[in-house]
Image 1 (tube, rainbow, N blue to C red):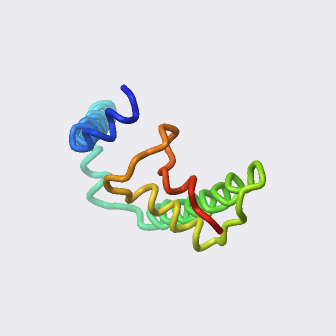
Image 2 (tube, one colour):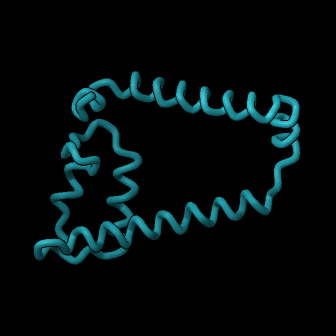
Length: 113
């Protein structure tokens, strides 16, 4: 399936992704046993949730570093951290903008530091 086709049908793509996520959760619940699965969610371990939250923040920082490094390839502009963060945020929250076909928003390739 081409990137343009995925872009043209965001609701279908979202529904397919949601169906896959539900299927994976059901497979895990079946393998683990539904009662044990439900008990695990009835008593969450907040320490682990904090670890996951911190890991997500570290991942965002890593993306910012990566965007800044990629922008420098072939003499590109030096991006400020805030601008790289906005590019990353735009990538994940983009609505209706064309893609380059390589997973990055088209406007990310046109950013001037």
